[in-house]
Image (cartoon, rainbow, N blue to C red; front, side, top):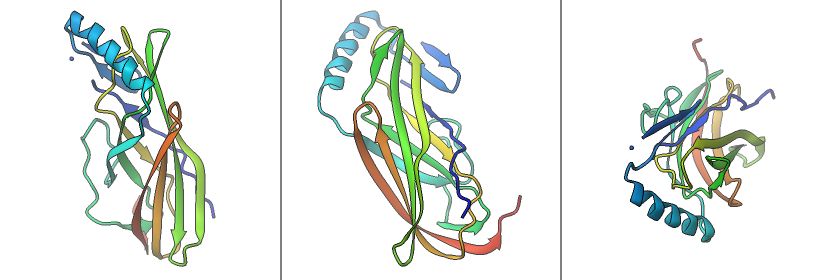
Length: 190
């Protein structure tokens, strides 16, 4: 089977001074004395044991371009040859402050099982979503999202379990989400 989920996308960070770095956007609270307090809190949070959380995950009709700006699919039924567009909101990522940038990184694996429970797709590291946002100090990121797409999926008609394994690369934490999907023989229009 030729299945490769490589069309990677971005994670966007929105946290009020707008700063831009290619696919990433970040806004910081403009009050200077709050910056020092927030920096101390961010360092304390980063040093505490935390776990990766996913606030929202959804299949979408097209690739999301901004935080919470997407149209969810109304069905978990896909046509043969259709791309999967997936939106997710990770939270509690471990971040690092290096060379004037807040950095984080997420890696996503895909697993698809058929009705018999056999693994038919196991793409480790299907997407790598690095975050590098120019920042005045180590401030917490908020309103992060990932928008990823697969190549056209050509699985035979049937029911499947689609699983995403999401890893916080700096924190070493991971979480999984799975959903039942149905593939139909109808060919996707291009």
